[in-house]
Image (cartoon, rainbow, N blue to C red; front, side, top):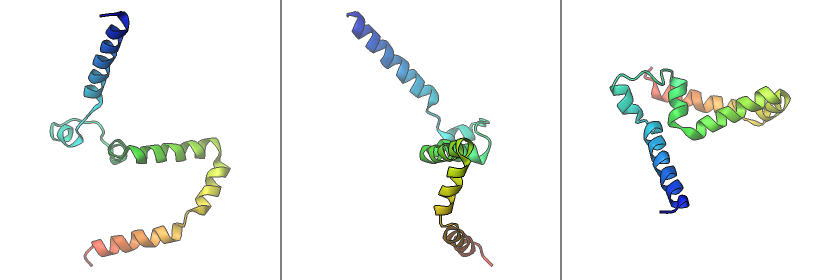
Length: 95
């Protein structure tokens, strides 16, 4: 086995170990009494990586260029989103 093959084997083993360490089954960890992540926000961000990317990008834009973030916020139809969320809430709750 040459040096390149040894390095490739070592990298594959290291990656497998990292995947094993970082791959957390959220339902299983909660059942076992694990405390991370405690907040709903962190649980949502760890379950939905795309959501985490959007939140981090929006926060970064807000910090770096607040005027650009405000300009983008004006493009979002907040009224339509609010009506949709209110309609969804009212149809799910029993009055």
